[in-house]
Length: 253
Image (cartoon, rainbow, N blue to C red; front, side, top):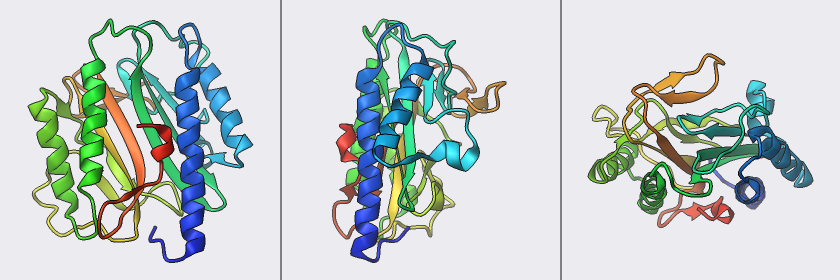
């Protein structure tokens, strides 16, 4: 989406605030002993109270209102009454929604309770890399250069990146051009650049071991093809000629 009018700007700001506040409150709501379905139902109520509709439910007939993934599963996890949260779990919540014809997307990984699996550094690194990457995006910057930044910082921290998932354009639908805003340097992607006034979702996928995804038997959830853990953080941003506007800043990432 390219924002051309004040009405469009207001629309994308409103839906972005809705998903950001929902994500923040869902994270705070999560407690040891809860099921991921409990958290998803809470998120559904939050979105509805803000007049928003779950994007994965509407777009893909996803069996839930948000994606909630635990431990080795790091994305597209189906909320379930059978998945009970435990002390030390690494959890990812991804919230996207539609409101008034506009769409926005955000997500984060976090540790519940004590860091008994030693994954806080992974989570912190993912969040820090997202912050660093977003700060470098402006109109005219090559998309592949942001992938290079993410990959380089991940390697320096002792991690790998997932190479077959990435960020994407968003705004008038959940996934738009530019697609495949990847977490690595694609030397063949020399021409694509970020466009001023466009809206994109930038997300990190930082891994302890894997570089690709493996889809679970339910056809939805992703884990690393070589095992390990993955942390993800995501903001929807509006690109300008200078520093971008982080539309989902209310999520506290």
